[in-house]
Length: 528
Ligand code: NAI
Image (cartoon, rainbow, N blue to C red):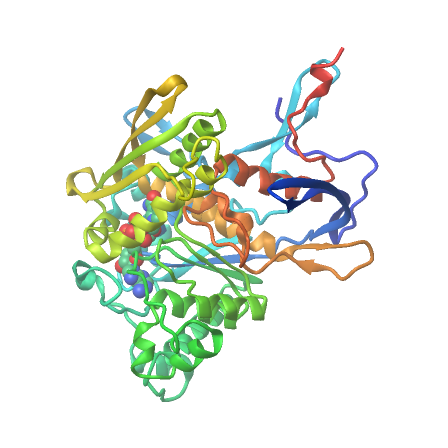
């Protein structure tokens, strides 16, 4: 049974905050002569979130791409309740694929033995994407197509819907952006007809600019963000990179390994060439105290950027949307390894025919993707040395990733995976998957979720009883569920397993709502 909303008996929230006290049960482990001594720990904590969900603008870098135009079209269809016809009937808009909008949490069981569920979004006051007065989109693209034309080129949404969306989208044009062909594939150059120039910078900043290095780009981006916020009466903005995958930026001592190096390099003609356009957006967001999320695989968040964000207490997150094949991988590998089965060989092939695929046909950009896709099984494998035990070395499954550009399949990416595992008494088990991932239709709701979560995390505070309220860490590992290669604070383990990632987010928000964490023990059904 599903209910729209719920209250917790005996819990009284104020109009200003939704808050709860809870006991955080954990353990401390100490290794003594190869033996683990586990001490259970219990800590009283208070957690709260402001009840006010601010009017928020999500600014996408790469707004005019397949993801950007699909999210805008889908959002507007939901906000204006636009239905459309197809040969199989009339379709109504939905947010399927959004964990926040379309998944549920279990509240408990009635006396009659029926489980009761509530929408995930009812746990805390999220920004409501269905309400155009609360959530809107904007952003940058190096291509000047209006958003209707961009949606047509992406060829993702049904054409009948595109016609209906035309009046809402043809007057929206992305803002000019920073372009550096050295970071993306040569085949993207033709798209770049909407880039920030010295003349545009003068117009935005009201004065002549010194175009040495790349600091001036950061200043223009900051001015664009402020203008967008002001013109749309927004209380908050979130910036998210969904532009083309860049190659990895080199990490060079003296250039970008610390905050001080990075800020100095921005003004240096030579050193600044190593600072990727995506990092310039991250730096601008940090300086404006705006949440920044990287949805592509490259290392936008180089060490200097992370240090800058942490010191400024400005929220950052990423990397790379976990939408199709990798999502399956982080479920399947977790299921196999936690069942005591040993994956030994994972072969993953993809082919796709959208512009992302074209960009990834270039080796340096493919390499960024290969890295984020490959690391996703590491922590799962590391969790079970019973299976992966070769004294003196780290054993991992053979793991290969191939991506090919085949124009004909367009945005309908095909993902084919073969998982071979060792089972009982050296037997072998092989699972073969064929997955048609409608790439942008899978990614668009994830982009929205990342923004809604990123915004929400900025309002979430925690403290020990009577201590100072503190936000969560600026490196938002709480949004790992949405990321192929989750960014985590220093000295923190990376969790890739999808169920663990979801449980983390759900349980933190259950604490705010005053619900117990979901343990799945259900003793009431198991004990006489
Ligand atoms: P796309 O190629 O259709 O769109 C990218 C857009 O970025 C283009 O409109 C391009 O003109 C623009 N662009 C390039 N450089 C720019 C810059 N410096 N500033 C502003 N705009 C710039 O690609 P799509 O399919 O929308 O994917 C976007 C990104 O999301 C890619 O990096 C992709 O790897 C990543 N991604 C996509 C997933 C999916 O399922 N669709 C999953 C995981 C990651």
